Length: 179
Image 1 (cartoon, helix red, strand yellow):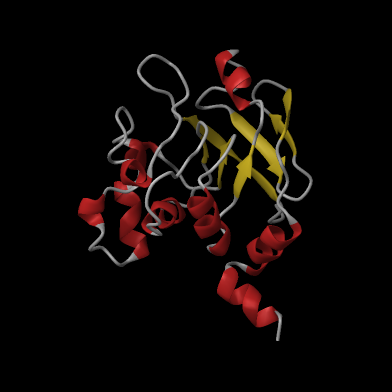
Image 2 (spheres, one colour; image 1 turned 90 degrees about the vertical axis):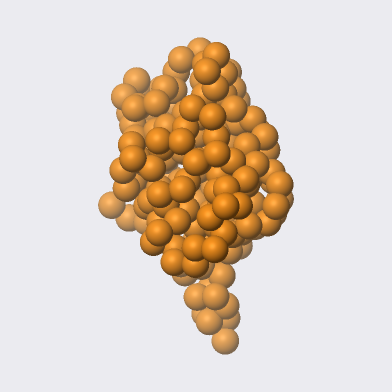
């Protein structure tokens, strides 16, 4: 499957009341108690380790899975580990209505696909997308579908610069293509 097409099982980050969790900050994604770890391969085991109801996520996550979260994902500090822990788990992409600016930039610079979905809350509330469903989407066009339920979805495609960084692998590799 070509790199532009992403497909995987989704994890919808819901609270104990079944509502999509908003404003997940970097301390909930990757707790500061683990900042001494410098090997990206070891960071995955701590992903979402400080998010109530999701501390066991690394044990359940499989390479290729896709995370769906609420608005303002990645609020808080600029810790790169909050992106790297998902890369370590081989998460395929992260979808949310919006991301904090710093988290978004860290993810883009790392070549990690983070994409916006405007009407996500209504789709989740209507149970049209639930954890375990399989979705497929094109990062360049934004065309998407919940394959488990046959429901189309429109994802905001990557900007041209984000796409070029993604294609290259990360910002440093992209920079080398410019010389």
